[in-house]
Image 1 (cartoon, protein in one colour):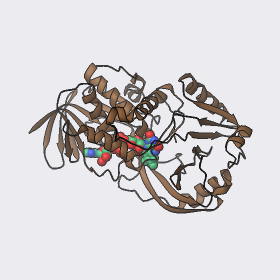
Image 2 (cartoon, helix red, strand yellow):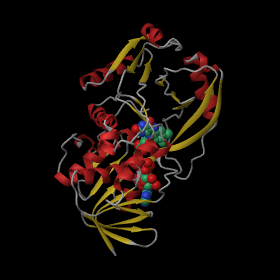
Image 3 (cartoon, rainbow, N blue to C red):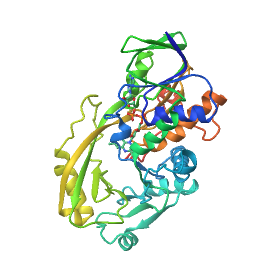
Image 4 (cartoon, rainbow, N blue to C red):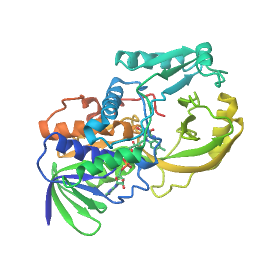
Length: 388
Ligand SMILES: Cc1cc2nc3c(=O)[nH]c(=O)nc-3n(C[C@H](O)[C@H](O)[C@H](O)COP(=O)(O)OP(=O)(O)OC[C@H]3O[C@@H](n4cnc5c(N)ncnc54)[C@H](O)[C@@H]3O)c2cc1C
């Protein structure tokens, strides 16, 4: 029977970032990074839109993304000269009608106070900046002039995992059980029957995080929610298209010579996804997305959808925000979950935060206590308003 000081459940971006920063912070104990599917075919990380933004409604989320932005800007310093995640700072453009304007302005004030490079422009200024945009029904838009854009999620994950070679044990297996003795977790059992004793468990299981918490008889309101992404081609190319978010929620961005779009799901009344269901909801493109795109960008009246995929958000049903840190009563179980659509860009910062907790006994770089489990126990939402 093996024993590890730390067992991390889930080896995609969050689990790998936690392991990476544990070593970076000088943790010398043994670490097992357990992943059931090292091809990551169904992980949120690889099925995501791979974008980073500063446009959040709460300062803590901006700080997490800003940390990651800093990493992207000194990527070669951190991972070596060959490191490249093709980060393109094309910005987000979040549009609002009259009804959404007060929230757009309030969010902008928070972002400006955090030093984010976001401008609010009225409809006339937007038309000047983006002549291809129809501002019908639009009062204003918030545009990220720098610090926002897209990158290669596979490449980022590969950088972390390559840097971990020889430094942690990569275990390919499914965690099927967590053993608990009173207020401590003591071991995990794998689907191959192997039992690993441990001093600390980190839950980095993404959309399966609620299920993994339940193994330790703990409640975590994180469930999979299906999100569809469609790829299309357009006759007219829009080179300066930011990641545009329409007031109705539909988003679009450029990816090389094609475009990717989504955001058509109605959250109202939505329940958990079947964890095995990755079939795109094809009708959403014709019924919701295309009409919205053609209204907002007339050049997109003539487009051809070429393929689609579906992934699962790690959706926190309480407040669509991360849950970071220990369970108050089972303090050697650490959460890094519930990112609800913004976990890829937050993973490096959260990995660092968890490592600081383990190594130094408290947060040093970014205070993540507002994301603590206490609010879950008290049913006290710490809500993020910009869930894209
Ligand atoms: C369509 C879509 C678009 C998105 N766009 C963005 C975006 O633009 N920007 C952004 O920041 N975020 C985005 N996200 C969210 C982001 O992808 C996630 O928040 C982030 O990837 C979570 O990382 P993770 O490592 O926790 O989860 P995952 O990537 O899902 O990894 C969890 C891993 O745990 C493994 N696992 C689960 N249970 C077990 C078990 N019992 N035993 C062993 N292994 C297990 C899984 O196999 C999986 O590999 C998007 C998500 C989706 C679905």
